[in-house]
Every structure is written in structure tokens, then in C-alpha cells.
Image: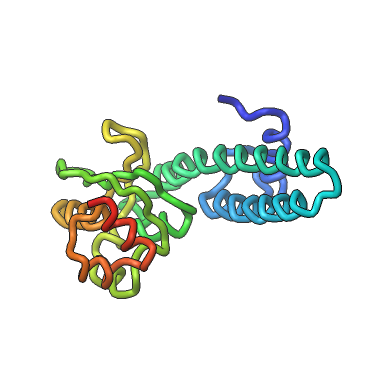
Length: 203
């Protein structure tokens, strides 16, 4: 669905602020910065709604929140395209790593990690962010986090991130761990408290 007039105006302002001529010039970090700034705007609108002197004014701020959330949804759909465009423009092996993608992406939801050459047993990862793993977890899964991202796409499993430069078995083990198929001890050691709770709930 094409963005409405207000979203088009915000996108035009985003292009102008980043001095690019069209959406294809937006990099992943430009998009994620805009998402972060928009979330701040949503917080402000919600505060203003609480302090509104009239129901009509409060309703206006709530309407603004809905529009800003729609804008974020549109930006989040643009992000994988920007990542894949970065990959297409890169010569040689993938330069973007999984850990970089997590830094760019605010949140990967219901995502599946797959290997670029070998069929893997996939598992749905409900949420994956830069804050999912503890320092011990990042060390234990360094090979997966440093895997190159060849593309982000919608495939037979839904949202998929294709990785290279890592053993397919490690991708499967990592995915299953995040999907809850690991011991409580490993979950507490490798995952942050919130991620560990979510992981164990999925079992």
C-alpha cells in the first residue's frame, strides 16, 4: 500500500535531511535513526495527550500517535530492502554481519535464519534484537553473530535472513536455542533476562 500524503511528506523530509535524492539512497542506519526519532515523537504525543485540557485535544494527539506508528511500520518495511540494496552494491563477500543487522534493525520479529548454500532445519525466532544476548552469549555464538548477511527476504518460512560464512549446523543450534530448545542454565547464561523468559515460555 502506498503511503498517504502525510507519510509522503515525512519521507520527503527524511530524504532532504539526509541529502539523498530518492528512497534508494537511504541506508539502513538512516532508516533506523528515523525510527528511533519517531518513537521519541510518539512518547511526546502520548504525554501531551495525558495533559490535554480537552478530550478533543487528547484525541488529536492520539490520532498523531496512530499516524506516527503507521510511519514506523512503513520504515520497518523499507529496512530489509535497504539492507539487501547495500549487499547488492558490495563487491565480493557480504560485508554486513548478523550483529550489524541487529544494530540497524530495531527488532526482528518471527524471523528465520537460513544458510546460503545448505538447507537447514529452521525455527521461528519470535524476537531478535541487539539486546537479546548477554556478553557471554555473544562470545559463545561469535561465529553466528559474525556470519555475513547475503539477503533479507520473505520466503517459504516467512521473514528470512540468509547467512554465509558459518556452519549450517550452528545456525540451526542458534535458532533452536532462541526458540526455547535449551536448558534453563544455558538460557540464563546466554540470554538477557527478558529474552530468557520469552525463550522458556516458548517451550
